[in-house]
Structures are given as C-alpha cells and as structure tokens.
Length: 148
Image 1 (spheres, rainbow, N blue to C red):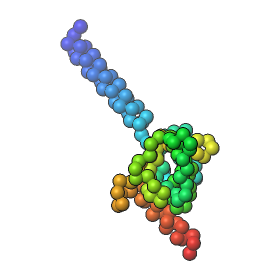
Image 2: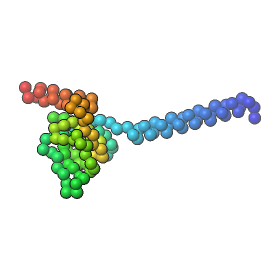
Image 3: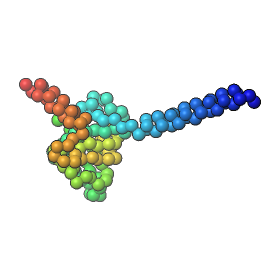
Image 4: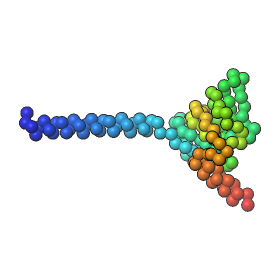
C-alpha cells in the first residue's frame, strides 16, 4: 500500500469516528432536552402530548389535595389566565405552597392531566424562573386588557 493510500484511509477513519461521536452527542442532547411552556400555551395545544416538558406558574389557591397514601398530591398550576391540573407522586419541596411559584416537569396525558415527575419550588421571595415570570407578566397584561 502506498503512503498516500494509508494517509487517506487514516483521514477517512478519523472523519468517520468524529461524525459518529457528534451523532451520539446530538442524540443524547435531543433526548434530554426539556422545553418550558406556560399553562396558556398548553391549553392552546402548543405543548407536546406524551413528551416531557416543563410548566411554570403559580400553585392555584385551594387546589392542593393529598391522597390517602401520603405521597400522591394533586394541585393546579396557573399563569393567572389558564389552569392546568397536575398530579405528582413523591415528596414535595419545603417551599411548595399555594399562591407561590413552581415549575413542574412531566408529561401531559390525553385527558389534559399533567403527570409530574419533578416539582421545583422557588428558592426565596424574589426568585422565579425567568420564563415563568415573563409568562405571568404577559398573562397579567392580557387579563388587564380584557377587563378594562
């Protein structure tokens, strides 16, 4: 085999390995990508059914209901315009309360019930994820426009 042929084979093999590595990284990234949606977007059908995503907003006052098993909790997340019912099985964060900000991750069932696998509560009085704060601000502005 000539030196040129060996060099071409080495370069071709290196390019093939690099392409395979990039494909694996992109595949893993796509599988772990989680999008954020507001309750209004979910109700408008903009959120994927059967895929994992996040919903952020406020825990609706009077919506927290605990099941007899002590682990299952049902509550509602709102952006002050629309409300999404959520069910979650697990331990809730200490800061999780009615009227406070929360972000839930899970899937939307065909019945419109959001099945959460993770619940995140805001960390302090001033913190709210930027997407959730923006969504609440937009919903509040839309509510002000409608009521005037």
